[in-house]
Image 1 (cartoon, rainbow, N blue to C red):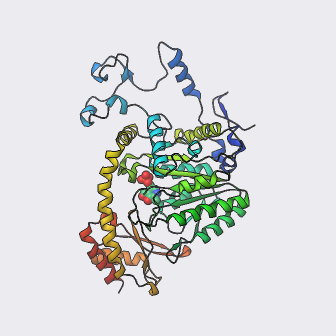
Image 2 (image 1 turned 45 degrees about the horizontal axis):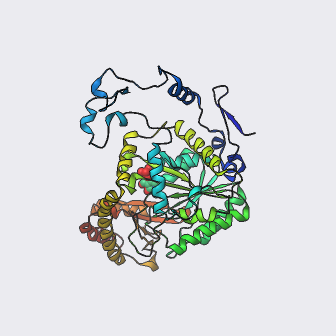
Image 3 (image 1 turned 30 degrees about the horizontal axis):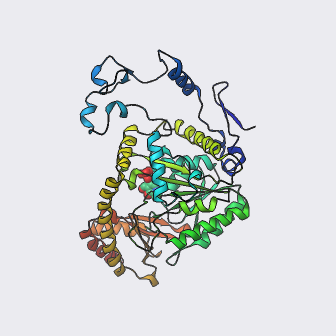
Length: 464
Ligand SMILES: Cc1ncc(COP(=O)(O)O)c(C=O)c1O
């Protein structure tokens, strides 16, 4: 029997359905232990149903201050600072945003975002909709990476990602969680190195009982987005690897930059749907999608992210039960760390999504500006490249950045220092000789089109 008891006697949770799946096998010690204790929620729920005087809710509320009741409210409302109303537009009600959000997020937002995932990944109508969980809201994607890392990686476990990756992966997974961040070679020439990915997955799955793999397209720092053939190869390779070894492989799709694709040859659906297709008959393949409003809705400070699993219908257990139990574990992670994500931000994201056509049309104006910069950057960056000398850009089809690889004779930090001191150009150096990465990340997302030629010129002069 898989039973986890909280500090409250009699408050426990059984994970009968989840325990029969590879997802359970893949959980870390924390992941196995965590659940959402019912204590306070049980009593609050009982009071809502049966009590005429409710003394269970830990927020200041009442009906004594009439100004604080929304129009037409006859009962009681959450108290808030009255002038908050002056700072909100007509779409947001102070009484709503002042309240706590439910632990896993606003129910309407969760279901609307799920519909959005099905639409943008092409999964809608494809027969795998039932496999997709209701997204759980996180405090931005960073928080989602931390939660999934904590759920599946114990200190000392290897986690795998591409050699070109967002530096915060190391901070979250290694410095915070104590896992070892292993990498596969990202590119072989101008192609994604699917072969090395498969090789490293197999090596690590032989070493340990499960593996957490973190993939990110459009990629930070390179801006790389695979074409559809490569997406399918990646999905096939990881599927084969965990099938062969019969061990769980959790594949996190970090889709932070979803939607920012400028090159027509790049795939627009993301890796997640290809993994979902593959997990249909392979319960060892566990796709997790992390996405959110930060970049996708240009709402960086809103801190709204989502964690969504695909549960293989081939898992031995009732699908809905597995999803419910997984939701309980994710809710336990949220409750024990941030308690719940910002309500005002969730309400705003919900408003933006409820007006999706308008919102995405308005975002389209920003994408068009970035695409213009990308076009100019693509054209002008050729003058810096000297591939035979090891000076070349990784392929970049989308996202916010381009990455210029440099030979070891040009240590990236030295070049970045010269660029800022001599040319007042700021870039991010990434220098990791142990995994063969040395170069500078150039964020053309934050440069004007008219500034690109000066930036390229500065880099060219510095490398002469
Ligand atoms: C690849 C990648 N993933 C995740 C994030 C974090 O997103 P958020 O701001 O939603 O935490 C970033 C932000 O820079 C990123 O580059």
